[in-house]
Amino acid sequence: MSWSALAAQCVMCYRTAAAQQAERSRVFNSGIVVLLLPPVLLLAGLLLLAWRKSGDPATKR
Image (cartoon, rainbow, N blue to C red; front, side, top):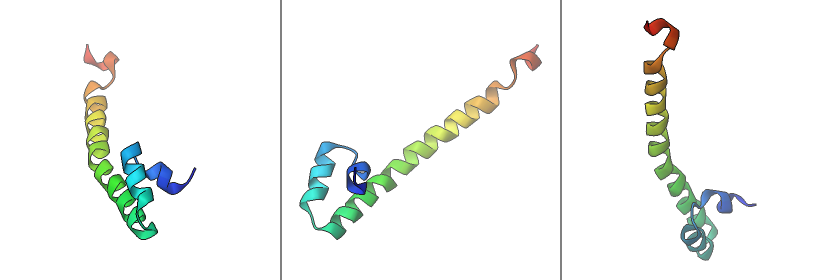
């Protein structure tokens, strides 16, 4: 599987990227990855907070 197939998140994005020139396709796919980073970082942060807040159940007596 090629990098463009991995970077494009949906069929519509993949076909749009494939129909463009190579450089535009690369920039388009990079933009998809950049837009994906904030939600992933927010989710990771929330999970970290929940994990730290839960602590060890044995110490909560």
